[in-house]
Image (cartoon, rainbow, N blue to C red):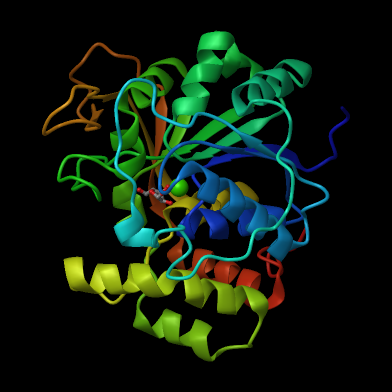
Length: 325
Ligand code: RIB
Ligand code: CA
């Protein structure tokens, strides 16, 4: 396979609400080349996630160009709970969308990731916006995966802050803490955690009103449809009329790395044990362990520019419209 000039990216996703926006961000940008989408167990029933990714491809007009590969249908060792109460039963708010009829790629997602990394050493970036089961399985198959990839960017964990699924943990790390531990211990990860999500990617009532009352595009309408339930959930549980963008912020920063304002290099580990601290992210900010500070934690993101990219995506189908080439 010959790759185009843009940065080639595989997006690993448990496609529900925010994942769809992340996929659109990547698919509609000229600056990165989404070469494949891999699906991992997470937010909602696996087959709904697969269909949600295909529906998103259709919205981006990319259904003939970008294959969807089905991966792990459950975490490595543990049971997990779906997030229907946040994203709706199908993962895209209240109503299910009609089936797309798009066929999945024939390969198992884990084999696809390994094959692509081996065939294009040092070129592929893995954008991980789901539990890390597929990536951990790929590592077990190819222990040199970190060297074979260009970069590994992960949305997951809660860096010295409250989690979103338990007080101790963010959802992606909670679902498969064994996989998260393997990945954080064996890859040079750029980490977008839940704390960053809350600090720098929240859209409040003014932005949501701008989207609702702005140009009546299919993507703006889709956004409002899929965020209605999560907005209500956030109002009820946190008393905040807002929605966050954990996954699309990561992909936006791949499109425009200058969105990243501050980072820190830390040793990061994950508590894989069942119980109160399942999925807890241990981040050695004070450098008191002997562990290698190999994780680049994104600590601050340019929220105004991110929001501008997001609105350009919804209204013009061009998240990089204002960025130049
Ligand atoms: O916890 C945030 C993560 O859970 C994100 O990946 C979000 O899309 C949901 O999947
Ligand atoms: Ca996700």
